[in-house]
Image (cartoon, rainbow, N blue to C red):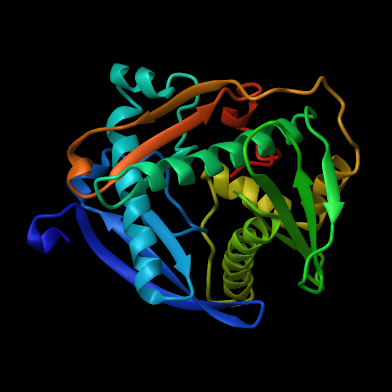
Amino acid sequence: MAAAGGPVARIELGDFTVAGARRFAANAYLCAELCGPRRSENHLFSDATGSGTDAAPMVARFKAISETLERWAHLTLAPISEGRRYGFDIDPSTTGMAAYPGLFAREARRAALHEAAERFNLRAWWEGHLAARETTTPWPGVEAAVLCSEAPGITVLLHRRAPDGSAAYGHASAATYAAACARAMDELERHALVLRQRVLASNDAATVLPEVTDLLERRSLHFASAHGYEHFLERLRSGCSRPALRPRLICDAAIPGPWSRYASVWRVAYAPPSERFLADDPTYFFW
């Protein structure tokens, strides 16, 4: 923590419910002097640098701190020429980054590999290069699709329509279908919670909601809408419209830096199918 000379300014902890079970959500904030300039202001999601979810509050905090350290590495390297060594000139996002406390980087690389596969599959599927195989889940009302490619692991995309027509989503990659579904379900419920909070605020006549300008938040709101959900379903059921895309590795490396005092940071990244995910397009399924 910052009080002891560390990079994390503060940590917040809350809880929510996933499939009837209590889960803890932690947010961690990097010290202001390490953050650099902000691009836009969030009105939907938290301004936290990193977040983590788990059944145990201590593990949720651990995950939030780990994500904060990987974000520190990204904020430091992505804008400068040295970032080319880690593929930030091709994919400037945090995709495929992971941090794990300790001297051994194996766990950090494993987590980075799964995230890289998830993001590659999601983009390639949305742009028509991959098919999605629809399947079932253990949760009533939650539907699933498996995104199939040569990338490691199993990528699962969950979606659920609410009675009002809105929708929430979650996606994850893991070594097994069950593990990927569990991670994606955490994400889906957090997405649904954020949307419910916005609806409650909009129903309060005394509350004036600020205009959402952040691109990723605009995408989230578009696909949460009834119109956006129909857009999503149209793509889900339209199959593969372009040649299959094989993953091309652009980075698989440890990222040393001042964060290495606290954790091993690793990045795995595949070349994206195009630069569409970077465009100012709120109808692109990636946030």
